[in-house]
Length: 333
Image (tube, rainbow, N blue to C red):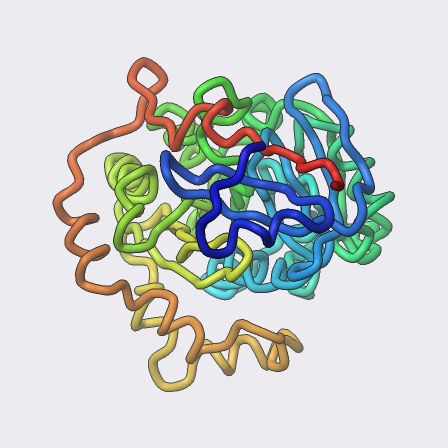
């Protein structure tokens, strides 16, 4: 790759570098200390690299999915607001979650009797178990865990209506050409709603959610969920390795569900609930963190309120194409 003589250009002259193109004119570069895995599964490119700043990275289709350094921030933020927002979650379904870290966090809740994780890409699951075992941390060995390699949509359709307490969508971003975009649509969410038991909760990762990129998919996912569910809350968290505020949306089946923004934290209820479950010392998540996550800044909050786009199978929205985010390794000089 040609370099200009501008300030900082010589930084790439030493070592191997992985470049992720975020958008036209903007990229992030990681110095790679070791390539642990690089291959092509049936569904996507899969890479694991060890980097200087963030430790081991999982990369699929050129998009960095999570890092050893701060994955706990993402996974605790995805899992615990939804499970803590349910008074006694017993049956949980994870759509995706190939690293195994979402399963790890779910099983920290002692009331959970069964957590079924359905991921379409067995190579990602096997590769993470081999190269990044800290993600699952033994979760697959739990008798409460059920791992299924297959289509998450088909797996959820096979569940009995009204049988699941919490559905967690830990999916790849909706990419043009990617495997998951149909799992961000009204038809999928309507099916999810039918599978939830009374008091049920659904949460989905929702892409970038900073002031300049929240309209890519975060606000449309929020609007799409509001077309299906009676109550929806968007929330965000800073994940340093993602180089953006990251978004999630959580929805409840029942209109009279406790308010997951202010109601759940009133009178110390959230901290009491976490303590009763032995989760009072999570490394990231507690009631103060919860309030910060659900307190959207005005720009993002108003973008959600103004959003009109609804994601359907016939008219999907994509964060980008898989080509846009193609990663590039720099050969060592």
